[in-house]
Length: 367
Picture 1: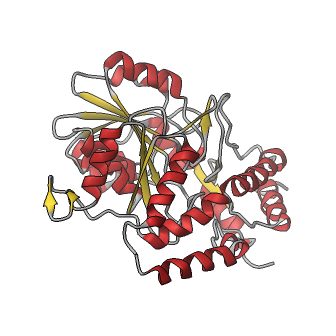
Picture 2 (picture 1 turned 90 degrees about the vertical axis):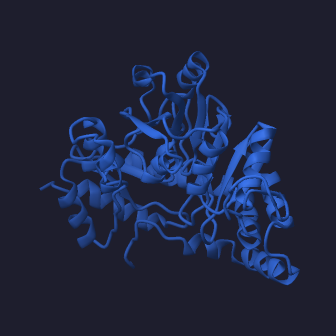
C-alpha cells in the first residue's frame, strides 16, 4: 500500500474530473475572467446553500475576515473576543484593522467556551468572532444572546465548517457576517486561494463589494481605499462544480469519521466529541495524546502521515508578542496545542487505508 498522507486532493478531483475540466475549458473559452457570470452564479448558489441573502466572492478567507471587521467599522481602540486555539488568520482579521483580540479559552469540543465570554466583555468590546473549528458548529445560542445583551457585532469564521449546523441553522447566518475560505484543502475547496462573505444585510453586502474592487462602486470612481480581492471566474466555476457534490462529499467524510469514532480504542488517545445540537462536517479528525511525538513517529514508520493543527497558539506566536499574553495565561489553549494531532482524512480514502490507520493507532504503546 502506498503511503497514507494526512490529506490528499487528487482523488476528489479525479472523481469529478470530467466536470471540472469541462467547466475550466468553458471559462477559458468565454473570454471573461474577472467578475463575470461564474462569480455571480456561484454567489447566488452559495448564498442559497448557506441560507443567507447575500454572498460576495473574495480572493481568500483572510480577506473575508479583515474586510468583515473593516465594513463593521471596528478598528483601533476596539476589542474583539476570539478563542485562543484558532489558526492565526482568525486573529489577523482583527489586528489588520488595528483592533485588539481578547482571547477566551476553548471548550471540550475545541470551540469557544460560551460560558467564559461574558467575563471578558469591557466597554471597548465591539464584537465576538466565533470560529467553528475543525468543522463542528459552535454553541451559538448563548453567544447570540450575549451579542444582543451587550449590543455587540457577531462575525463567524466558517473557514472549516461549510454546511455545519447548530440546532438546524447553518453556520455563517447567526450574526452580521459569515466568513468562508475555499482554500484547496477545505471541504468546499477551490484549486487555489478563494474566499467569501455571506450576510443578510444589504448595506454590508454593498460595502464588501466596493472594498473588494479597489473601493470602487463604479469603475474609476473610488469611494474608499479598498483592495483587490476578487474571486476569479475559473475558481468560481470550479467551486460551482464542487458545491453540487458537497453533500455527498461531506457524507463520505462523516462515514470515515464514524469508523474512527467507533473503531479507535486506545486509552492513550482522546477522541473528538460531537456537541448535542451541533453537526460536524469533519474538516479535520483531531485526536489528543500526551505521547504526541512518539505517536507521530510510530505512525510515520507505518507509512501514515499526520499534521498538528496548530502547534503554536496565536498568543504565543512571535507576531503577537506585542499583546503581552504570557505562557500559562491560556492553559487549556496551550494544552490543546501540545496534544492535538490530525490523522488522515480525505475524500477518496479507501477502506483499507482507514483500517490501517485504525489498527496502527490501536496498537500504539500496547504489548
